[in-house]
Length: 452
Image 1: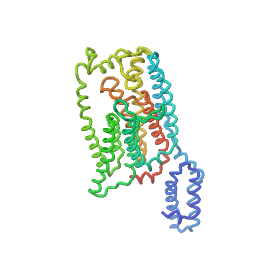
Image 2: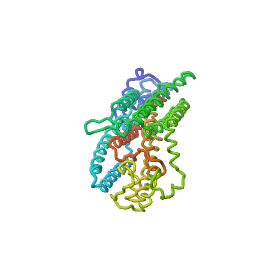
Image 3: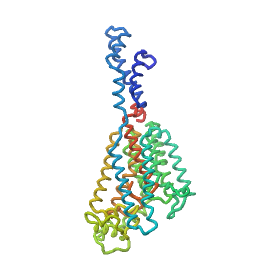
């Protein structure tokens, strides 16, 4: 293929006119390359048949067709595509969250702590939806160049909050600005995984022998496992570290490029091993939970270690098909607005409503999985897997926790549980995923190959 400068002027003008109609500027190099190749081949064929160069160029362009029409067709093929069904599921879940907060507020209308639940939840939901909309219509690819900066900034912010943040339940994880506070550790898994998605797909690492591969492996383990582990240990934050590790493993296994899959898997195993050592006392606690004990099926021990589980199972058992009624109080469930919101909604609105929520969660997970499978850009796929692994893990854990099948941890149900920082970051993450899908036809194939 001739270089662009050596092409006949008529060919350059034709390709330029085609590209003028294509709004996705990132794919212009792809269009130029493909059309140049076709035109060069046709011109070469005609020249071999004895046709003069100027005539060969004119005939080749005529055979290609009208530039404006081709440009409009290519514009249609590369225009943004919105995943409205995914946005609708998120909107429904956010709406259920508002209903849940109103139900809890109604049930405890006489208690001051619950009087502002609906207002606060609505306020944070509106902020989250606004940020979701802004992020959805931005170019996520611009974030990739700042992956290393984002990683370093996340580390620095976590160090600062662990030193100067507000202590809640013995853990310094909050920065307060007047009446507004930010849970830095709740943000951290998302920020780390966004940064790592960019670092993994940067194209800097190449398979260049055993020594360099070992050095690269050590770098991965240090940056992706050891540094975050030390930060989460410093903040005494087990559950966010567990959430981060789930996202890290999924990201390394499913978004790693072909020639470093082995290294990525080894790094993931190393991260998992470190996690097991770190949470050994939580594992013993989990075993003591008596998951398979006979008391799992009985209600005769409402005190002691089984109290929460008994309360959960009793609330679900007594709910019936249609529940105890909207806004019915339940004084046995802890943290109704956050950790126990799913159990409480089943208790007040019934098994049918609970099954509907589970169906929505499954639909959301399957929809995002389908979206990820359609993405050809490695960075887009890594972003989607990394971000949604956090949300998906929280959905799975909170559902099983809320029906007594997993121990109680401070893990709320995404979009539904009360929590300003968590609610906003979850909606922002979905905005990023929607942006990725929206621009899936607008990413240059040449750029994709550069990442492989």
